[in-house]
Length: 298
Image 1 (cartoon, rainbow, N blue to C red):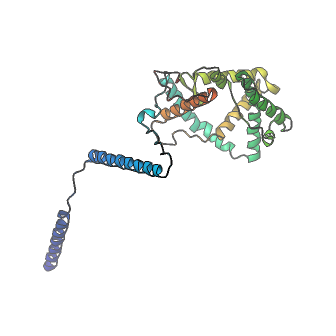
Image 2: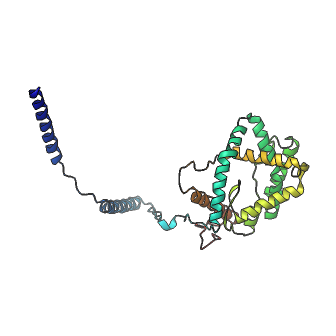
Image 3: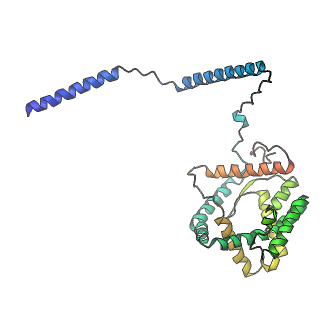
């Protein structure tokens, strides 16, 4: 037993000596990430310059015009995530409410709605989309885009008659594409800025201009009151069904990204989308950002 223990101790000692000798034969340089990155950057820039010069020489010898190098992007070219949000505290509270409402009520109901047969869901979706052609006709006329207004009017007439009240999108097969618009876009066409960022209960991200647009579109539909759908008890049922249909066809999920900055990200993406659409209406280059110093973003 004693001899066996001595043998084990001897093997451990030899192993330790061998491993120590192995480690001592390696010498690692000190870590200098900043210096290494700077050196690598200088090498990359030098190689890029040499490559561009060689390409210019080859093009010149071949009798071709040398290629012009694209301008380098800098941090100043990236759009700022800062957005004009003077009601930030209120908006964050509404955003939290929307999150809880969506998780507890809205999304479970929408998931149950998805279990209905596809023809039923398609018919419901087409029915409400056909009703939205009414404000589209009005707003395209106000925007001076008469061609698109005629397209929406044609879709409304065809789907309301041949499509049996809009349950079937017959106009789509006649190459009359659905392109809804609203009073918010009309205000943008008239030159109104998006204004302050606004989170609306249940509806979600918006701006002051788009919020006014929602109210105006609902007021127009309420005033016209097609088939008495917007007044009385049936209006509550149809409004709820419309909201569930919209939610069931929206893939967004609150905090699915796991980012703690989701509010800022959604705010930036929504406002940036509006600015790009506004620039398209006026055929201009989209502005870089909509900041607190420049609430108009233009």
